Length: 286
Ligand code: PHE
Ligand code: CO
Image 1 (tube, rainbow, N blue to C red):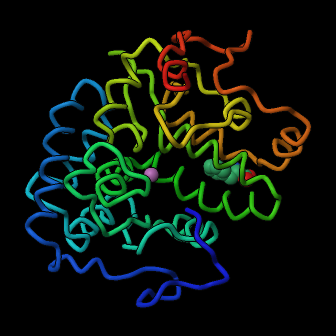
Image 2 (image 1 turned 180 degrees about the vertical axis):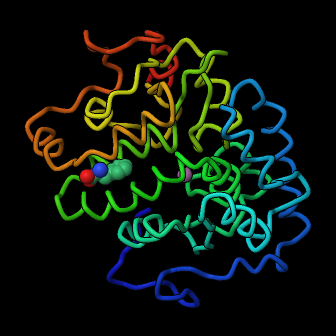
């Protein structure tokens, strides 16, 4: 999300920081990276990802034949929820990002990772942005949430609470889990686009898995360098939308008085799905 607004968009980008996807210029090697990642994840995700995600993959026809052409994908996505995907050169400034979301445009990188980076990369690429994020945008409730989040982001910036709101994005849009009658399922884009975390988030005994609570989430820092130490579990997407439709100004005022909660802490009032051992995080820190 973060890049410098003052310096303006990079050369070749439009004032809103978008560029053409230029689908025709992807190389066969680049398409092959998509195919490899796609095949790995689509074999792993049935029974792990939530139904709205799996349905979205199908509805968009994000098949394994190569990098999707945004023009085709957008026709299907727009017809379903009014969202479109726009290509950007990389991370964009917060206000640019939020303005796109508020207008139902999802900014996605056009570049794809190199074959030697299949498992780890520092900046989101087209596989994370499109395979990870776009299927959920076919769900009408989630689609409304993302639009509202964009408007909320602009407001949080004015109120000086963006660091709190960013945690909500992280623990829902990127790393969210959902409770279903069949068990816990993934809806977060950072998980579904990661081979390792798709298993870790659901099965590993290390992380805490706690019931979603809006204010609690906004008090919890997150890590950007490794698997999460805590995941928050939603009862439904409707609950996410309902909780976030309220006015956040009083919540931000409360957050200004409340301390952060340590990343591995379990509070007496938490709904505990798993009390994690934190063994993974401890081993990595040693
Ligand atoms: N309702 C929030 C506000 O008043 C905005 C928001 C919507 C934030 C959706 C996050 C997600 O600021
Ligand atoms: Co993302």
